[in-house]
Amino acid sequence: MLPLDLPVVGAEGFPAGGLPFVSETGFVYACGNAIRYASINGEDEDVGVQNFTWGAGSGVTAIASNPRLGVIAYAERRKTVSPPCVFVTSADDGSVIARLPLEDELGVVWVDIARESPRLVVLSDVPDHTVTVWDWEEDRVLARSTARASRAVCVNFNPASPNVLCSSGGKIELWELVASEEGGEDLVADPVVSLGSDEEREITCHCWGTGDTVFAGTGTGEVVHLNARTGKRVVGSSWLAVCEGAVSAMALTLKHVVVGGSDGQVAWVLVSGYQVDAATPWVHGRVCSLSFSPSFDALLVGTNAGSIYQCDVPRDLITGGPEWNAESQLEPDLVGGFHDGKYVAIEAFSSIPVAVTAGERGVLTVWKLPTLTPVSSTVVSAAAAVTCMSLWDEGRAVAVGLDTGHVCLFDLGDLSLPRCVHRSRLHDAPCVSVSMGASVVASGGDDGTVAFLSVSDQMVSPMGRTRVPLLTGLGLLGGGEVLAATADGRLVRFPIPEFPPGAGAEPVHVKMEELRVGAGIGSFALSPSRTTAVCMCTDRGVRAYDLASPLSSSRLASEDLTGQTRCTASAVSPAGWVALGRRDGSLSVFPGPAGLGGPPGAGRRVFDHSWGGCAGLA
View 1 (cartoon, rainbow, N blue to C red):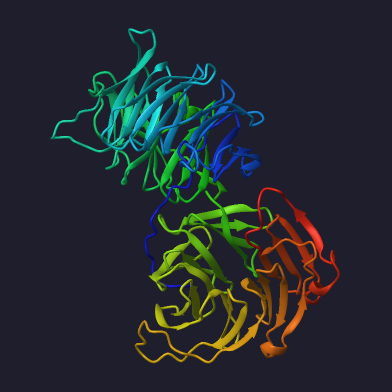
View 2 (view 1 turned 120 degrees about the horizontal axis):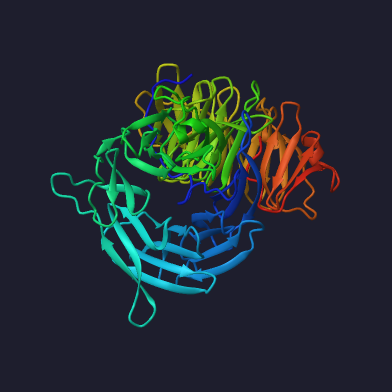
């Protein structure tokens, strides 16, 4: 186990729109440029990812659905070589029904679909905060207006009218479609909430109530019920504190407004009576999405760690039946853990059936094997990208490297709530590789520096640094040695230096043993015994080395390159089997390192997919 307990900052786990339902049990969410279709299942079953479709653009930043109309809408993340577009697709087969290019915009933050009519509203934020209303059946922009001076974060239609919208972010504004004298429609922005100096608050999110009323949440965890036309508080409403952090998500049922907080709390506030009626036990992370199934019997909670919690809702809570009281509890079950963005690493414990994955956008997820049931998800960083990861089996600990040069150490404990126990910047460039042992952590930077941390039950402290130019990967060997690979094709082995007390930032020189392998080495995998290395070379070759011998005579085998695509991931099992994943998405297994030298096709091709290359193996 590792010491200390440091806070971890958050980052959005899902694009705007979160986890919208498309049927009674089916919902969708965006991951990178993929639209994933999933379903809620019965008790003690996991969320099942049924299928997915690639987005028609270059990345999804906002998503919405309408089960009544059978459509899903999503917007591209940012302008690339062409303006960002909004796509309306069929919920059945994913085919594109309509497409709206946003010619003068650079980025989109929210989309929403009217309840009963084929209208879509788009909120963009670069260069201005602009609201655009589009009828996709007529392929006509009905209205477009830029009226906000402050940042807006979301906008949606009044469920009772496709002509009325509300946006929030700092303040609340009402938007209404009205007929112009020319016979068209104009969008008029009407600032609704103008709080006096004695009660001025920052509005962080909102949801429509019944009629022309709106519930607004604040950055200090309060909720208020407002008349959308006048901006006045509804009779009986007050600023009700419901969570310790900011209000970050809201949803409405027949009797409650459900409020999610940045502290992980989900509170059920009675619309009539205006008091907290129930509370869901804290989820891990900041609540960023709340979605009810059409019959209100299930609530999905999405968090900034990319986790999905399912809460089965008792009918008596919705209807006010006799079986529900204020002491009753709603237990959320973790049913999904998904990364927004690509995976960068995966490692598995040898002693327990558990794997750990790292996502590019800062999410660490623990999975139960072989069912791939998510156990927990943790945000590593809000702003930095994860670049590498290493697992220490005996201590249930993980080291993670970031593109800012930081290295973070996590104590997995009982696996349900990983703790960040150390975070420090070891490199002036992105961290390209990290390796964790029982008492030492080694990390390599893109600037060629190799840094070492001493790890004990009591503390984590820096030891010192050395340098390996053009470093691409490293791993700790037995006996206090390190194996490193370089971009110019060198395999380097050296002992951990004897750092003098109080060693500073200047690298310490150490004698190194080198072997020229090929044009370049992208990365390598070590066997669990640390006696065999499988190197993935930039010339598409894969070469195995026996580390019990001097490097000059350590070569075991080389793979035949005929007809092969570049290897992007490799792993060596305790029994000596070698697995290779390639850029074309294929996975092959060889009966030992010597099998790499067999004829073409000697490896058993066990998996092949067409939606992306293999990013990691364990």
